[in-house]
Image (cartoon, rainbow, N blue to C red; front, side, top):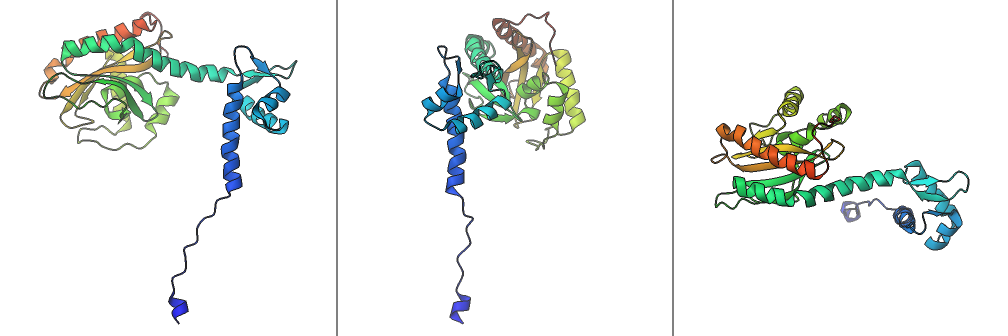
Amino acid sequence: MSDDLTPKPKTETRRNPRRDGGRLSSVTTAIHLLKTFSAEDEDVGISELAKRLGVAKSTVHRLASALLDEGLLQQNPETGRYCLGIELFTLGSLVRARLDVTTESRQILNELREKTGENVRLAVLERQSVVLLHDLESPQTLRLRSATGQLRPAYCTAEGMSLLSGLREPELKKFLAQPRVARTPATVLDEEELRNQIRKVKRQGYATEDETCDAGTRCIAAPIYNGEGRIIAAVGVAGPRVRIRRSQFNKLSQTVLEAATAISERLGYIKRQRVYI
């Protein structure tokens, strides 16, 4: 009887270490394969890649084929040798754009903080959120807490709405298909209302946030354009509602727009260019 009542050990799901390790090893080898190329070795053959990586040619061929399919490698049809693919350039451009806007905006952001006396933010879109690359804290005693690196919902922040105004319809539709949660009683969740707000941002050139993300907080933000006329970031001025009053929105928005324009021009943006949205 006692044997029947003895709790049986829980059955654990066993992993296949060889299989899991193989997956990790394949990813690592693929990364090392990409790093093998250099300015001196722009194109390399399978045999040489296998030798440098210390793996079988069949393994290199399999990884190279997968990278070729994803556009991370290109193959010379005459020689069969491989070189880095154009997709890496696209990914690199995204990284460079963030680095450029972070560097080029620093002085203007500091000047904007001195002029407004409020928190000044630089944000980029990251899936459903905005990430604050800069959040320069207000010099005033009553101020918002600095949150550089923090993720905030794009659908209820001024920076987020500015960035959403630059999405093409397929991208915006995909964004709006994701679930949304109310952060405050003022958070807008309805898709059509969000679309109306985005259209308004496009018309007036800036977005406002009136306690839609955090109670007691208001923000005005404007989009930043790169040299190709695309929105890549947003600059915002945020502070407590006791200082940023609705009656000041119009005046403050012009100050934010001037800063956004100055940063955009540093990135090569010319206003008369057509903006692709």
